[in-house]
Length: 127
Image (cartoon, rainbow, N blue to C red; front, side):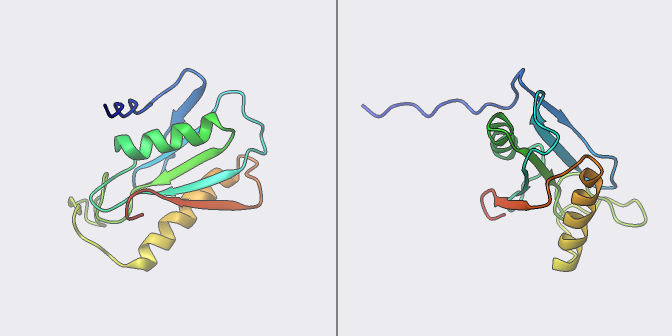
Protein backbone atom coordinates (compact mmCIF):
# COMPACT_ATOMS: atom_id res chain seq x y z
CA UNK A 1 0.00 0.00 0.00
CA UNK A 2 1.26 3.51 -0.75
CA UNK A 3 2.34 5.56 2.24
CA UNK A 4 0.51 8.75 3.10
CA UNK A 5 2.15 12.06 2.32
CA UNK A 6 3.56 13.69 5.45
CA UNK A 7 1.68 16.70 6.77
CA UNK A 8 3.10 20.10 5.83
CA UNK A 9 4.94 21.82 8.68
CA UNK A 10 3.56 25.35 8.61
CA UNK A 11 5.22 26.44 11.84
CA UNK A 12 7.66 25.12 14.37
CA UNK A 13 8.67 26.30 17.83
CA UNK A 14 12.28 26.54 16.63
CA UNK A 15 11.53 29.18 13.94
CA UNK A 16 10.21 32.72 13.91
CA UNK A 17 7.97 34.03 11.14
CA UNK A 18 7.51 37.74 10.63
CA UNK A 19 6.40 40.19 7.99
CA UNK A 20 8.49 43.07 6.69
CA UNK A 21 7.04 46.58 6.63
CA UNK A 22 6.57 46.87 2.85
CA UNK A 23 3.58 47.74 0.64
CA UNK A 24 3.13 44.09 -0.40
CA UNK A 25 3.04 40.80 1.45
CA UNK A 26 6.37 39.47 2.74
CA UNK A 27 7.66 36.93 5.21
CA UNK A 28 11.03 36.23 6.76
CA UNK A 29 11.38 32.80 8.36
CA UNK A 30 14.49 31.89 10.32
CA UNK A 31 15.58 29.67 13.16
CA UNK A 32 15.28 31.41 16.53
CA UNK A 33 18.90 30.49 17.27
CA UNK A 34 20.23 31.24 13.75
CA UNK A 35 23.58 32.87 13.23
CA UNK A 36 23.49 36.54 12.26
CA UNK A 37 25.22 35.44 9.04
CA UNK A 38 22.69 32.74 8.14
CA UNK A 39 22.51 32.18 4.36
CA UNK A 40 19.58 33.95 2.72
CA UNK A 41 17.24 32.10 0.36
CA UNK A 42 14.74 34.14 -1.65
CA UNK A 43 11.67 31.93 -2.21
CA UNK A 44 9.45 32.87 -5.17
CA UNK A 45 5.93 31.48 -5.07
CA UNK A 46 4.00 30.08 -8.01
CA UNK A 47 1.00 31.11 -10.07
CA UNK A 48 -2.14 32.01 -8.06
CA UNK A 49 -0.18 31.73 -4.82
CA UNK A 50 1.09 34.11 -2.11
CA UNK A 51 3.52 34.26 0.82
CA UNK A 52 1.06 32.59 3.21
CA UNK A 53 0.26 29.66 0.91
CA UNK A 54 0.78 26.38 2.81
CA UNK A 55 3.27 25.03 0.24
CA UNK A 56 5.35 28.21 0.35
CA UNK A 57 5.19 28.36 4.16
CA UNK A 58 6.23 24.69 4.48
CA UNK A 59 9.20 25.35 2.18
CA UNK A 60 10.32 28.43 4.13
CA UNK A 61 9.94 26.64 7.48
CA UNK A 62 11.96 23.67 6.19
CA UNK A 63 14.72 25.99 4.97
CA UNK A 64 14.80 27.86 8.30
CA UNK A 65 15.01 24.63 10.27
CA UNK A 66 18.08 23.80 8.20
CA UNK A 67 19.84 27.06 9.03
CA UNK A 68 18.76 29.46 6.28
CA UNK A 69 16.94 32.76 6.46
CA UNK A 70 14.04 32.21 4.04
CA UNK A 71 12.56 35.38 2.56
CA UNK A 72 9.48 35.52 0.35
CA UNK A 73 7.28 38.23 -1.15
CA UNK A 74 3.98 38.48 -3.02
CA UNK A 75 4.46 38.68 -6.76
CA UNK A 76 2.52 41.50 -8.47
CA UNK A 77 -1.14 40.51 -8.80
CA UNK A 78 -0.94 37.98 -5.94
CA UNK A 79 -1.68 37.95 -2.21
CA UNK A 80 -1.79 41.33 -0.49
CA UNK A 81 -1.85 43.45 -3.59
CA UNK A 82 -3.15 46.97 -4.19
CA UNK A 83 -2.29 49.48 -6.89
CA UNK A 84 -1.16 53.08 -6.35
CA UNK A 85 -4.77 54.22 -5.84
CA UNK A 86 -5.40 51.58 -3.15
CA UNK A 87 -7.57 49.39 -5.42
CA UNK A 88 -7.35 45.60 -5.13
CA UNK A 89 -4.93 44.54 -7.87
CA UNK A 90 -5.01 40.75 -7.49
CA UNK A 91 -4.86 39.13 -10.90
CA UNK A 92 -3.22 42.18 -12.48
CA UNK A 93 0.28 41.34 -13.72
CA UNK A 94 2.43 44.45 -14.00
CA UNK A 95 5.51 42.92 -15.63
CA UNK A 96 8.86 41.46 -14.78
CA UNK A 97 10.29 44.86 -13.84
CA UNK A 98 7.86 45.03 -10.89
CA UNK A 99 8.89 41.51 -9.84
CA UNK A 100 12.55 42.58 -9.80
CA UNK A 101 11.68 45.79 -7.88
CA UNK A 102 9.81 43.78 -5.23
CA UNK A 103 12.59 41.23 -4.91
CA UNK A 104 15.14 44.02 -4.53
CA UNK A 105 13.00 45.90 -1.96
CA UNK A 106 12.48 42.70 0.03
CA UNK A 107 16.19 41.85 0.07
CA UNK A 108 17.07 45.47 0.90
CA UNK A 109 14.66 45.31 3.86
CA UNK A 110 16.45 42.27 5.31
CA UNK A 111 19.85 43.63 4.26
CA UNK A 112 20.05 45.68 7.42
CA UNK A 113 19.99 42.44 9.39
CA UNK A 114 23.56 41.36 8.60
CA UNK A 115 22.47 39.35 5.58
CA UNK A 116 25.20 37.16 4.13
CA UNK A 117 26.59 38.61 0.91
CA UNK A 118 25.24 35.84 -1.34
CA UNK A 119 21.56 35.08 -1.87
CA UNK A 120 20.17 31.85 -3.27
CA UNK A 121 16.87 31.81 -5.18
CA UNK A 122 14.35 28.99 -4.89
CA UNK A 123 11.03 28.60 -6.67
CA UNK A 124 7.83 26.98 -5.52
CA UNK A 125 5.58 25.59 -8.28
CA UNK A 126 5.91 28.01 -11.20
CA UNK A 127 8.00 30.46 -9.10
